[in-house]
Amino acid sequence: MAKVVRGLYRIPGWAYITDGTMTFDIRELDYRAKGHKRDYNKLPSKPDYDAAEAARKAAGKTKNPWP
Image (cartoon, rainbow, N blue to C red):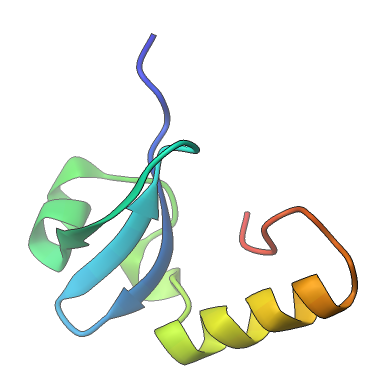
């Protein structure tokens, strides 16, 4: 069974994605072409993602805030 790959955040021309085990960068064009979860335009920017992660960790939460 293939793992679901989802986007975590974006930077110009790239998306940072995870399959729940590994994380890696993928070109924006490939991300869009493969139809990964969360539309590329709805992915948070890197600074927004980092801020949400810091807030999550400060609150003691363990779940990623980006569904």
